[in-house]
Amino acid sequence: MAEMEEALVQGIPVFFLDYDGTLTPIVDDPEAARLPQETRTVLQALVSLSAVVIMSGRDRQDVQNLVDVDDIIYAGSHGFDVQGPGSLEEHRGDEYLPALKKAAHRMEEAVADLEGAFVERKRYAVAIHFRKAGPEAESIIRERAEGVAEEIPELRLTGGKMIFEFRPDLDWDKGKALLHILEVMGFGREKPRAMPFYLGDDLTDEDAFEAIRSHGVGIVVRGEDDERATLAGYALADSREVRVFLEGMSEILRGNP
Image (cartoon, rainbow, N blue to C red; front, side, top):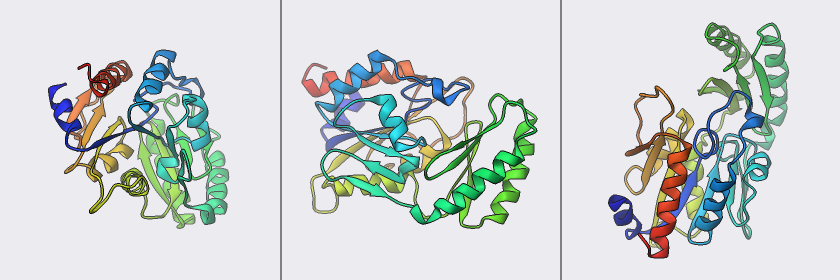
């Protein structure tokens, strides 16, 4: 933790945390990804000492309900939907809602014959999950999703851990959302310096790691057999280690390293 203590004195800490695979283990059913009470307690302690942002691919209201900690900034749909204490609020992509509705309908038809695959309709995204569908399902779903993407050019097709996802075709991602949130919070050029910490486990988190690579701390949460390349400078093994890390950071901020 010595390197983390050194980072803390270089700026005002702001903790950005992914949810699935970071604060909670990855599970087959997204509705079963419940936040352990001990992790909630750690977050409650941390937010009393520092700004905390939950940045998730889930709908903002969904992840806010799951975490259920006051005074946290919640950024859902990979940063398309942000709400926090005071007047912090950001919504992008409302004009794409009809296209997302169409993509959800097309993909529900496209995976109807694949047992274990299902479509999750979010406000600013459409996710196609295939974790329970078997290894052969990925290439089938990819081909069908690419066909839908050609039909609906307003959206872009992206991927993640055992999902494909349609999002508005905007130049916006977790990295750009992170920098925007810092700006709204009062950090930026000729302003107080922030020291952002970003913890995440998925490919979508690489945009955030890249955004803070020169002036923050990126920590990838590696699941079992995850050896992919990453822009993060540090790594933790799982959500339990994330909890221990956040506990340690809270103690340092209290002055009890």
